[in-house]
Length: 331
Picture 1 (cartoon, rainbow, N blue to C red):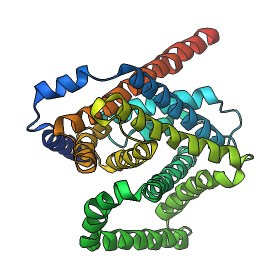
Picture 2 (tube, rainbow, N blue to C red):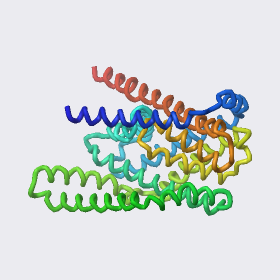
Picture 3 (tube, rainbow, N blue to C red):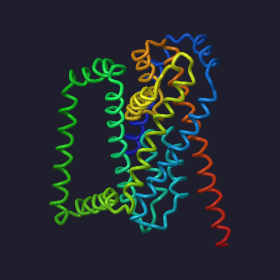
Picture 4 (cartoon, rainbow, N blue to C red):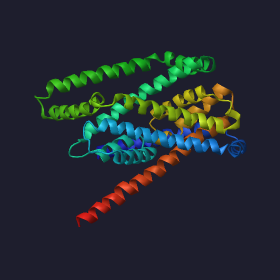
């Protein structure tokens, strides 16, 4: 009962936050101007956006397959691809659940849940590193374009709220202390023993990067994922006439900003992505609210449609067709 109450409160707050951010993103919009901008959109660039979005998912599945293979070489790319797609689809509806779902879909007798989840955390660690690198590269390449915006809208707000950084540092210290405590008490308590077993399984998955045979290929996949994200932002900038003067560096910086929105715990990033990108484009290019929102809407909704379509197909193929086909063979 308590667990149900916690989940209910969590999802209520999540959807409530999404509603507030959607309201902030869409309030005061001149819809006539918005649809004029939509009508002027160059759809050839949007097609390229969808191609880049699809390739980003392909490279993600290839990278995760590499992390899984040291643990179980029988797990093939097709199963990883379907697990990623189904997990991505679920994330759009329930924030934070996609990684749990795709982990469960790859769990086998050889691969405990916590071990597979360890590989997911390793992936996320690489993604966090990539976001930082994208910001750094875009600032180095085009400081004249983005430096002022970064200092005034990102660096100064963070510096003025240093308590948040100290709180994060304190959480890291507490987490490390807790892990040490679990390790020391593993033989004295059944609870801590089980918790230690789970953590060890998690670490096995997390350490798989060291066992990858071709680390350069893994790095290549990681780079290509974020190249595709950069191209996705660049193509939509090019698709909107008012933003078509954008350079590749713009795509890199805007993609970095967009990924920050994924940290906000709302369904599919809805609201958070729209609000952050709208105000960012207004600050960067002096564009209208309507054009900023148009960019965010095209990026977010088209990518969501792509993920949902692929997720439905993977679910039908993996869960319905293959499962029923295997059941028929056994009968």
